[in-house]
Length: 322
Image (cartoon, rainbow, N blue to C red):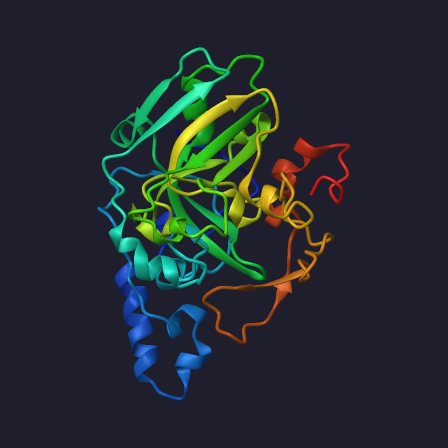
């Protein structure tokens, strides 16, 4: 299934133009051997141990037209600078400790306000639906952002299989709860398991993706293996990882960070440079992989996807409904 978008013309970065992983890693090694304090100038991930638990290569990827014209974030940074509190609160904790997690076999329960409740297995997910490679801007942590070549399945195509009813106004998601494998879940700084939610029209938007891979390989554990949500116009914490449950609901579902700190994290969590976080500005950001002293760039409204998604929020006060 090809999803066309004329906004990204021939000048966009195509999946076929993505530098192979070994090229990025060799480049990093060369920089590291060059001296001149390059460790301090590299991305934050360069200061930490690197453990990437990558899976098998994804075959028969569909070349999607959802691409952005920007420099890709190196795989090394994508896999070593993560917020995945199930493995700890440090940005390097997921890459250090996610090796104990066993992502396969895997299935997702789908229930709630739908005609066909049931289960979808991971192998069925990647075997029954076109797996597309899309290059998305991704606002990750505080003032950092990435440009990531995700591989995944259209969320809408999966949800439609279960035939949501007219009562389905929202879609709720839940992360797996395995404290024996996810050491962070043994601590009580969040109410486990992690939960998130979207309005049904957000979930059905063609940009919303169930990601199963990055850089053409199955997701590393620390990036949300084996299935995570990617909603590129929202802040990263909305893109819930290691999903085991999807529920169609009539009422707005609770979400983890909104329950934890509602004055800081709203249900919608759209990227909005006009609404500062109580503890930092959202107006500017740095691209991960550009170095500790990379220049800040203006944050784009809806993370640069305003043309595609602004109509979803027509008439809403985006400061109040943050």
